[in-house]
Image 1 (tube, rainbow, N blue to C red):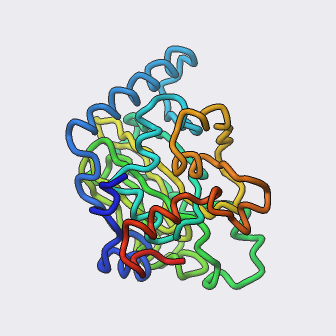
Image 2: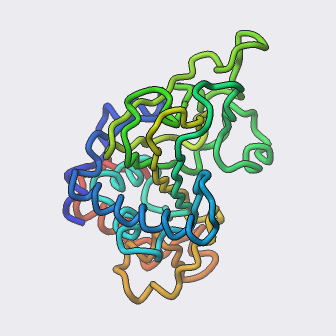
Length: 279
């Protein structure tokens, strides 16, 4: 927890997040930690493929509780301070996702990618115009394999599109929308992005599998996207992890939190300068 104070949101990161909808944290997982995460991820991937006889894309949710490494990444020193720096202290972990994209049969992109904003139906249910939708949540993507070359199932984004009502194409034949780029990041890097940012996955036309973890943070009054049934682990963790895992003194404790609901608030007040975190 002490290390959180060494990795708080910088002014440069805050501006990038507001203007572009994302920023990159290089070496978020140093080599030893990266190897630890990969070992667990490879074990789960192998178990899944043995049980299902599947050679396709693995998309696994609800990671916390499957291994200690996933618990550690929930409040990882190099990434978690960015989450509470952006959203404030009334937050929770509302989604986790593990994706392994093996090499595919094709060696070129043949159709448009599925650009979207996160949280699905929520984007339609807001009454406000698209460009004024509130942030509500954000994600940290831990890239566990190298994607510095295009074609390795790169994560595509449209910088600045979090303030737009959609993506636009030059013509009906163009595969990528205007302004779209393939993120090209190293193994161990983490991409922090606004849930409103238009983004898409892409096929793996390389010879190497792509492996990535997504950790989503939101305000505590939002229902979780993953099941997140973690009450049985509450007595095994500290107060802040307990908050992130969904604990509340009551239903109203998510809207009008008591100190017991949000111990992260007290930690911020004690360890960080005033104004370092919103709310």
